[in-house]
Length: 307
Image (cartoon, rainbow, N blue to C red; front, side, top):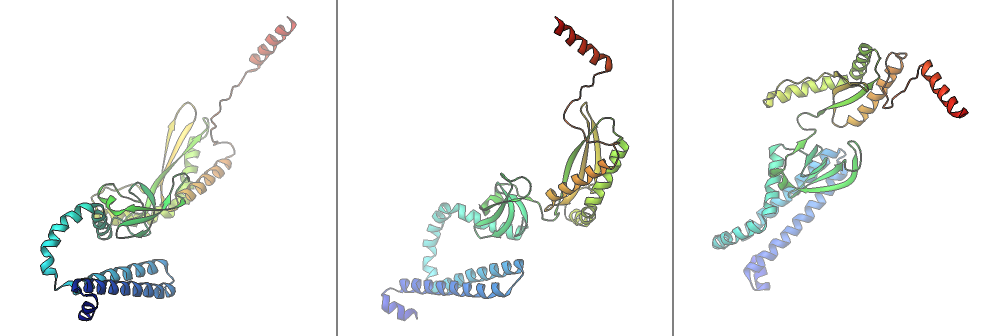
């Protein structure tokens, strides 16, 4: 085949390059066909994604071996030239090289995987793809309150893993601690208020507490970390406006917003059932006038009117 192409083109190196391009195109076409066949038959999203990535990787490896096989006879003579140009290429493509290195660091270093919720390279979102050069996110937050998608797909260079911290919300410990503050009116039954808060938060997040215990034990075996309180905690601070109760609890990273909503509704229903013994404080001030003060105000108004 090489001899035939050399006879047509008139240059052996050009003939090898043309054959390498043809083989590369053929491999890419075969990869696309195999991907379509597999993705139609695999119903599970994660399995379909991993199969597609594996076929892609196999295609890259096949192209690399094909090129090496075609140019193996000339690589010895090209060693010096490749060495000289390698430094220039490395300098010009340092960002790309850093991104490729970042891909291997992310893949084999356990920073995150597809499906994880992370903050990385200035972006917070769910990882939907990890490419050789960039990681793709479905963005969270920004102008949308809570842990909800914005609808924007964001791509970040893998090289950012060497420059910026990586926050993983769902890695080894897929739970978060959250807090809410409940203002309780002065004069309320403090013990009853604390009892209601403990009861409602335990009823709402008790399953998260039990599930997180096993995940925390696994975390302790891998890292030098102290024992943490996983059970809900209710504390109180008193000021001149109200009694501020703070509830600290653990929750699944995907359910923080909905858990807050259900917990607030439970607490309000529990306070309402206390028949006035516990009440939510308002940010308004009440001015109470005694009977004598009201009478004095009316007399003063009457005098000004007669004058």
